[in-house]
Each structure stands twice: as structure tokens, then as C-alpha cells.
Amino acid sequence: MKGTRMRAVICDRLGDPSVLKVEDVPVPAIGPSDVLVKVGAASVNFPDVLMLSASYQHKPELPFIPGMEGAGTIAAVGAEVANWKTGDRVIFGVRPGAFAEYVKVPASGNLMRLPDGWSDAEGSAFRVGATTAYHSLVHRAALQKDEVLLVHGAAGGVGMAAVQLGKHLGARVIATGGDDARLAVVRDQGADLVVNYRTDDFVAAVKGMTDGRGADVVYDPVGGEVLEKSMRAAAYGARLLVVGFTSGGPTKIMSNHVLIKGLSILGVRAGETVRRAGSALARDYAVELPRLAALGVMRPHISHRFPMDRAADAFRVLIDRKVVGKAVIEIAG
Image (cartoon, rainbow, N blue to C red; front, side, top):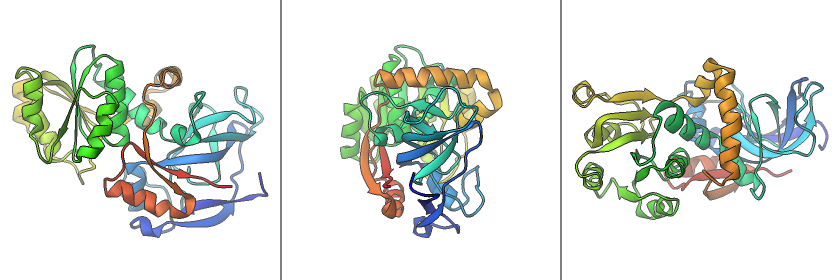
């Protein structure tokens, strides 16, 4: 560690990505149950964009360092930390604070080992997408082998993780998106069928693949009209996972479809569920996510990489829907 100061991306006023700037700030002091991680890379997620304008459910006080996930090397450990040591390569989660040269991370529940052969950039892009997909498909929907899974926003980080995990669990996966080139990458990640919802009717495509029955599970981080149409693409008794609203906001649920088709509408908040459910769910993640990562399941695809000084550009490519998988900020220093 060079001195007691570090470079970090700072948001000190609300707005669009142009408010971001890089400043020298103190290296965070760790407590007895924390570790200090020298950050190699951190990835950008849609909630990071929302936090800039206080549009996310978690609203950090100004000024704050954005970034929910990253990867790097442990530089120091607190006196009470037993399972980690200086030099360990790790994936971490924070709320927020990842876009900095160093980050303080609680050692319990917020760290996992970086799999052999993975870069810091890949590790930085794993945690949010994998946790969301696992919580959605395993804990909430209980996806079964040979069921049909419809994944919207499949070219994004949480969507692509759902495609990868769905295939690993033995489902037939239909993936939607708005760009043929991005969907080609999704097909390479294992989707059985990809549908450009801008040029084709995904409801008809789902019905055609399932002999008119519909999808058993719908995974939707998009919302809006996409969720409304998904009710017509759903099978009787289907589970609809409301993951997010990248279309711009929530939608009105057509209760007649819910009734007639016997649908289950399931909200997905993986992090909040862990905080409320406690140690049992956290242990599941602590065991299963590293196991899946070691198998190469949900290994991130990274389409864009930026230095810290171009953090605003990393946010913009996400907003402009140019990212395939994840955009990553590679931290220098």
C-alpha cells in the first residue's frame, strides 16, 4: 500500500454519469472483523446508475464511492479474521464503494475466493449477476430440469447469468433482447432460442417452441411492456420473476391474467433476502456460488473495459445498452 491515500471515483452530487470524478481520499481503516482489498477491477451494474440520481432503494449519503462488486488481492486483515490472509485473491461485495484502489470489506459473507484461472475483471463481474440468478431460479422459482425458462434482457449481466445457470440446471432457455449481435453472444452462452423483441414477437416464439403451452418460468429484469406481454407467454401455473425495471419504471400487473393462468408473481431482492433470512441463506450462497464458479458456470462475459478516469463512460455504455454481459472498470495503482 502506497501511503494512506488512494484514488477513488466520487459522486458528490446527484445527476447523470457526468457528476463522477476521481479524487484522492483516505484509504479506509479496517476494523477487527474486516479485510482491506487492493482492488484489481470493479464492474458496473444498473443499480449503480440509479444510485447517482437517488432512484435506487438504497440511497447512500453524499459523497460516496459507487460500485457494488469487484475483485482483487487482500492487502491487510483485521485481528479477528481467521479464514483470510494477506495475498488471497478474492471476489467481494460492498454497498457501495468498489470503484477505488482499496476497499474495506467485512470478512463474513462478503468475500469468496477468485477461481483459478479467472482474471480480476472476470471476478469483479460475477457476484451480482450470479447471486441474482441463483436466488431467482433456485430459491424463488425452484426451476426444474426440462422446464422452459424465458429470460428477458439476456444480453445484460443478470440476464446472461440466468441463461447460463438455467442451462446448467437442465432447463430449455429462450432468451430475448433488442439487438441481433448481442443476442448472438447469448446464443453462444447456451440459449436454445434467441428472440429480438424489436423485430419478432417473443410470445409467438415461446408458444411455437412449447406447442402452445408457454414458459414455466419468466425471468424479467426489464419490466414495462415486456412483463405485460410475458403473461401471455406464460404457461398455466408459471412463475414470473420480477428482477428489475431497466425499461424505466414499474408496470401495471394485469390481475385477470394472474387469476386465469394461476400465475405466481415473485419479487427478487437477493441481497435484502439474505439480510432478512440470516445465516441459512448466506451459507447456501457461500457454498454454492464458489462451487458453480469453479465449474465455470456463470463465468462472466466482458464486452467493455475502462480505466478509472473513464468511469463515466462505463456508466454510459450501460445506459445506452451497448454492453454485452458486463462493463468493467480496471483499477490502476
